[in-house]
Each structure stands twice: as C-alpha cells, then as structure tokens.
Length: 73
Length: 145
Image 1 (cartoon, rainbow over the protein chains, first blue to last red):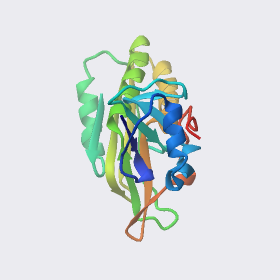
Image 2: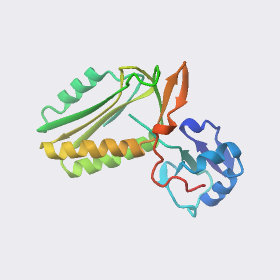
Image 3: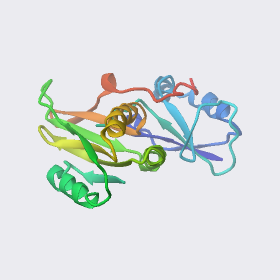
Image 4: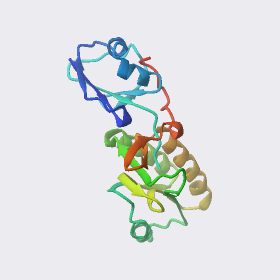
C-alpha cells in the first residue's frame, strides 16, 4: 500500500492504493476525473525525491506526491 | 540558509541581520533580490503554500553549488498571505568577488521560479485563486498522464 498526496492547489485528500510501480499509480489516478486534469502538468516525487520514470518501483509505505505548476516569489 | 515566515517578510530586519552575520566572512559582494507584491489586476495581495521537504532539498543542492564557487546563499520566503507592497521573497548571494554573485543571483532566482515547490494564489474578494497562468510546470511533469 502506498499513499498518494496532492500538493498545493490540487486540494484533494491523500489516497491509499496498492501499486508496485508509478505506472500503477497513473492507471489509478486516470480513473478519477477530478485528478485527471492535473496529471498532464503535475510533477511527481517519491518519498520527497523527484522522479520522472513510470517504471519506478514502489514499496509498501512509500509516499507519492503530485506537484502541480509552481510560482514562488 | 533558508528561512520561512508566516505572512510578510520583515525585510529590513532580515537584510540587516544577513549583512551583519556575513560581515567578517571576507565576502566582497552581497547581492540581494527582493520580491514585492504589486498592485495590479485588482488583487488584494498574494498567498503561498510551500512544500518544505522538497524546498529544503532543492535549496541544499543550490548551496552546494554555491559553496563550490566560494559563494554562500541565503533565502527567505513567506507562507500564507502577503498584502500589497509587502515582500514575500528575498534571495541573496555572498561571494568573494562580484561576478560570481551577479551571475548566480540570476540563475538561482530563475531556477527558483521554475522548480521550487511553492504555489501562489491571488487574493481576490477575500478568496484564494490559484495563479495558474503565471505558474510553471516542474521539469519532468506529466509522467502520470
């Protein structure tokens, strides 16, 4: 089981799901209409490290974070 | 050194403290950049969300890059609401000679804009409205689409 959290303006509560790679997370999130619109523009971190590889392997207890477009300053 | 504040930054205090802290470190150049909220598009101010774990690691990587050139970085940013004509961001580079600091402040602030996990909202009629049109997708975005 991994936890997926949605940062900044996405404004959704974290989800728990079974996933062995980021591709599994993608498949699950694509089913959710409210989240699907963010997937094109969101970056991904696993345990607070940026990852851009769908085949990235996940283990039990991992935290996956979605980071929408940023604008500090 | 990275500092986060609730609300507007106490700019004069921060700059005075940073200047004093580094005054005997033999830096010949101290170049600060200060970001201030402008009165435009009928906003009442700006508001910010920050994801601190990744902001910290992003900043630490930059500090290592600065150190390799004999320089030192400092940054302060606001969380929550910052009203018109208040400041939400200060970045500064200290270096032995000016050229390193002048070039690094430009590169650092541009990468900050493109990569730092901070989300900006306009304050409009008392509501927070995500500044989507001014935001930049982080490198590698869209992997889950």
